[in-house]
Amino acid sequence: MTYRIAVVGATGTVGQEMMNILSERDFPVSEVIALASRKSLGQEAHYGDDKTLKVAVLDGFDFTGVDIAFFATGGKVAAKEAPRAAAAGTVVIDNSSHFRMDPEVPLVVPEVNAAAIAGYKNKNIIANPNCSTAQLVLALKPLHDAAKIKRVVVATYQAVSGAGRSAMDELFTQTRAVFVNDELVSDNFTKQIAFNVIPHIDRFVTGGETREELKMREETHKILDANIKLTATCVRVPVFVGHSEAVNIEFAEPISPGAARKLLREAPGCMVIDKREDGGYITPVECVGEFATYISRIRKDPTVEHGLNLWVVSDNLRKGAALNAVQIAEHLIRDHLGGD
Image (cartoon, rainbow, N blue to C red; front, side, top):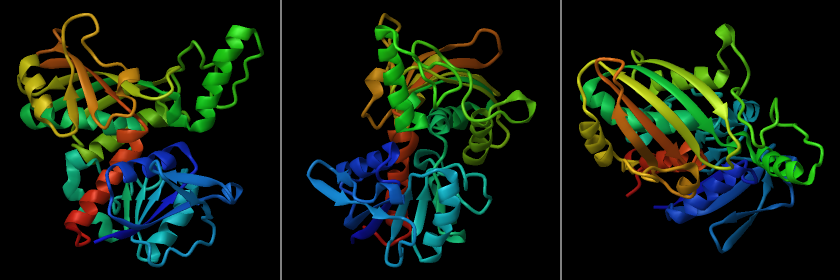
């Protein structure tokens, strides 16, 4: 059985990655439609290595007969267009933050809470989590099942690609400007990003947190367990692709680094690279283009009774966005739409 698919935001970084992954994983498509805003009219999008699609305009597009639509747009576009697609009978998998905390919309990381996909019938919409949340809950899930997590403290080191293609261009342009002594222009970030780190992602909310930090807590509660206490500091770093996280976990029950290492090695979507030697860990450069979430530096936290520290790295354009959306669709067709 094959499916008619639309990718909304196909000319963007995440939209293009969705097209790549759909092709790589031989998703059962009968037709793929690339959609974008009117300013992208006439552009082309690539589906795999050998297929080029003409981009159609999202505004006014008739979703009738489209089985699944992947939305890789901002929240405002998703808020307007996703319900319109859903009303036409299309199942929407949305990568924006707009629907994530809607109680009638499932928020899904398939390796963690695939059963929640069944809730798509409420509104014909499934939400993809924040990129930093997706890799975090993948690492937390097997450990929580084994020893019950009480508290998580996480510091993120997030690549500029999480802010879109223009942010990647800004890092490149600023880096070059430093070397040739040109003026540094900051359009996407509040401060210079080249050779710098910025402890500010998204807008500030009540209490001094940023919305990115709040999203990590709220989404972890919805996906994994509302009883987990979580605090985050989210930092933008001068890396093009690949989010990293330093994670401190306090458990209700004892768990050793060795036991955690074994659990994570066996967990779906996780890859443990943890040698206690120079270079025996994964960095963002090494995770780019990979499907796995990598976990390194697994060690005891001696300051609490039952504590561990982890280093978690993942390609944010893949597992943090496009891959997770495609995996949701794979589960959807297998378990709910009558696929093989």
